[in-house]
Length: 391
Image (cartoon, rainbow, N blue to C red; front, side, top):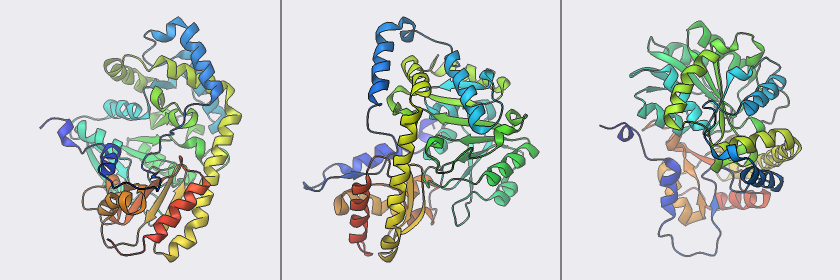
């Protein structure tokens, strides 16, 4: 069996196929299946990118494998201030998106048959990469409030375990993990000689003020912590594939081998755009955060009315809401009929969990970053109108 056949088809691509052969309708589709921004970068950044394309010849050439030194240094400076810690340029690598950062981290950590703990519900691309890398995913149970279970993690660690993965704010649930819990996982990982991979793709849209955790305040953080980040969400650079991996210099030396083999260097235009954004768009990004928080509030406000119709808003944050549905059918079947019955394209919880997971079958993920308040109201009205009986 090949590496690719060891895993499942890309969920977002599968969901798009549900739109084929739908009957004509005047009702607009509400696509809440994918979290990626659908708008172009803001106009000032587009102008800066055009200038880069026209006037910076080296932007069209291979660059350093671990990324532009200026961008690495800017991340180190900004992250050190934001997290009240010390991060050096030599602890930062730039990757072709955050998914590649995860793949690179796992490549440096794991051999065939090693294990990685992923909290359920997990980000499906993490599971897909583990499958294709010959790494065993160990599902880590969550508490009723969708936080990873520390005691369960302690029991599940074996001599083949190499890492624990946390995603906060979480995809798919939106849950923001409390700083003490993140710190406790770091302590557990250090005690057991593991890596703690913290994917903070959605850190710019965390509702909390200040640092979401204090991991980088520990001067020895890099013996345990690997942080992942994406510029796709912050500056709408999804097509330019720019992410980051924060880790020890020794690990980045291993990461460099992976990146050189896979992509040679991260895309140059995206890196330079990210650097320009970091230096010039902080006020704009703050406004984007407030808009996402307002959309989160709109969903939260609709929670009581949805509850009366049988829908339970289990969690809501960053780009995501996690809904428990009122139907006897599994979410895998419900999601497939939603485009026809309600004009909604959403992903079922079953795409974020192992086969047969009963709790996942009760949930849908709603990615609300691309719908405004009026569309959120329309979305919740459509869900309520479905009632509690399957067609």
